[in-house]
Length: 287
Image (cartoon, rainbow, N blue to C red):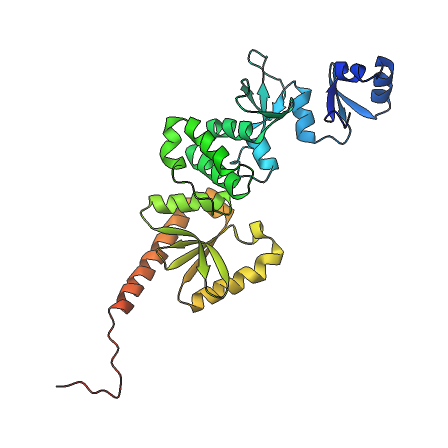
């Protein structure tokens, strides 16, 4: 069964010399799992895939993206690809998609990378679609030519956004914050270099750095490094705001108001300093 892909049909087993009696015995003793009539799985098979196969479908869309660490929005449901005309499964926590695959499947029970992304761009809103595409490109889940192929076939409403993809965004949340701040009229640079300390996630108007996700995303081992970078950046005259996931998805209006205030203050300060004339103390002013 492992050699056949971990999930197999009765026909596949009998074609490989396994008798119905041995199949029943393996199920009874717990060596294999019966998912539904005529479909069996190894006991170590991925739970998401066995759940999809158990209702006669294939895991797809954001479920596949999330499993590979690609941005997938906030839907907790298992997204399942079903044959058109199939009855809606009674199981809760599912998002069914009745369609025939447009791109390759990894197996009958799992959508391939391009098929999963193709379904996701039709399922997610524009903001999360762009975040997913940039995340897939950054993480090498999809190649640039594959992204381009999907983008060319994407719904027309998405064309302006996908024409401006930025592969340097390190996470979906970075993409979302960047686009929201840009839409507010500010110039934003991704992965801006901090001399002596590496890169900041985003830099607004060359004067305020934004670090996205903070400790919860980067892990406790990054906490000290992140705060050393923040202190160093402040020492160079570049203000830093560290933004959490909750501040992005729950309290964004307040977060955006703070960003605007800090950026506008920094721009005024920069303008004031630029207009200042420094006169050497040993060079007296002529009356």
